[in-house]
Image 1 (cartoon, rainbow, N blue to C red):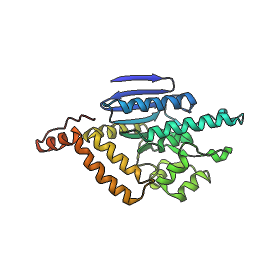
Image 2: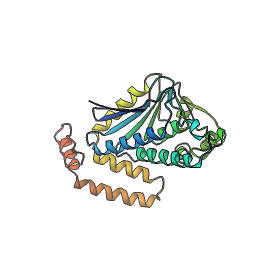
Image 3: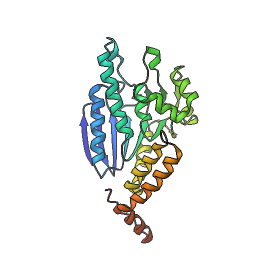
Image 4: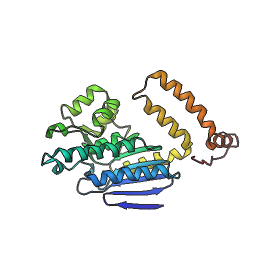
Length: 262
């Protein structure tokens, strides 16, 4: 087990899973520094072949993350706005491109950029008391870290407009109904549940996981015919990896595979 603490971002790696904790009391808000730290951390995890999945959660019992600190925008300085938008975009797009599986353990309020970081993950698990919203329009702003795009992909245009344009807050149970989250658990159980799911990724070939995730995310922008062609291409490419031979051989020998994760 290793521990990395970088101000408002903490990370523990254990059993092939990196657990990232947003720790900026009282509401785990994002700053330019913490966004850059998240980007750098995910980049380093991409290079760590022992890490197959990551889980991100918030410190404490009330907030997953309340997003950006609005005091940053009180001056109306467009330079500050540009810099923060860039930092948000780079951090969350890096998270979305993580080669393994990313899971958000939503343990409280996920507002604005706090919800957007969850939207950048592959899977979302919310505790029953969690509340989610993208309230930027209430203060004359808009979600600039993928919120308008990723939310619409998950819940459809109608619900995205209700949440963003009408300022509607969503409870955990409601989020499950509209497919904003994949699972709802009891209070205090999101992190435990997310880690168990993340650990199951080790049963899969890391090479296969990366290829499959690439194909799934291609459906957001590429036509079906391209995806079908790319699917066959990446399938054949897996035969260049040690994982392919190891996976088949381990199955035939009725043993656990020893992934190389090239």
